[in-house]
Amino acid sequence: MMPYAQLICRLCSRSVLHGVISAVVVATVLSACGTANSDGTETTGVTSSTGNGTGSTSPVKGTPPVTSTPGNPTPGGGAPTNSSFAEQVFAQTNEYRAANGAAALTIDAKLTQSAQAYAESMANLGFFSHTGQDGSDPGSRITAVGYRWMTYGENIAEGQQTPAAVMAAWINSSGHRANIVSGNFKNLGVGYALARDGSAYWVQDFGAQ
Image 1: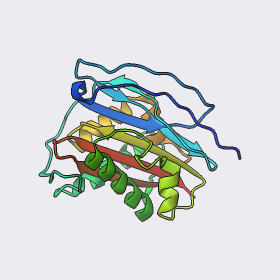
Image 2: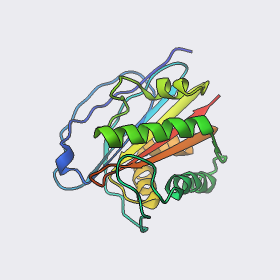
Image 3: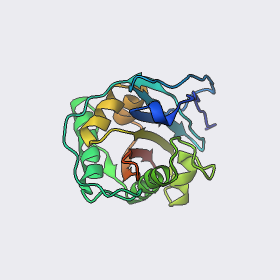
Image 4: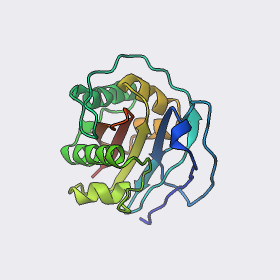
């Protein structure tokens, strides 16, 4: 099957964004650009891919609420001391899938490795994109850790301080929600990292083999 991808880029100033989320979705290639929001609202987008394709960003505006209290994360781009953050996102993803008639996803160690490493990369290097500083895309990253995928998807987020807040942001964006409830995915890995400036970075890597 030929790969297919959708691309929408957003030009934004990190200093004026309260939170940012993004995901990758795959379809025919499109391109558009926008400017940053200075009102503290959040920017969202989506990525998924079938075959051996790649995905890119697709921003959408949203204002997800913060509904729970964060743990005690350790700044510097590593996993939080409250390592349950990623586990909570995984559990809440399956809860939402169950409520919407989708089968539960199974946790995958390789997708988790890729998601965590990419969350740490964004936190440590201070960027937000589905394209890594090394030019990698979601498909190449999960391939690099040994995940032999037939299809994949990726949701990313920056700025939401709790699992509940990031899930609300993704669910309130049609592209991210599509990844969360997709019947095409069987596996999930979640990553969370905190930058030195306190910004939280989140990654969901979905896949099926």
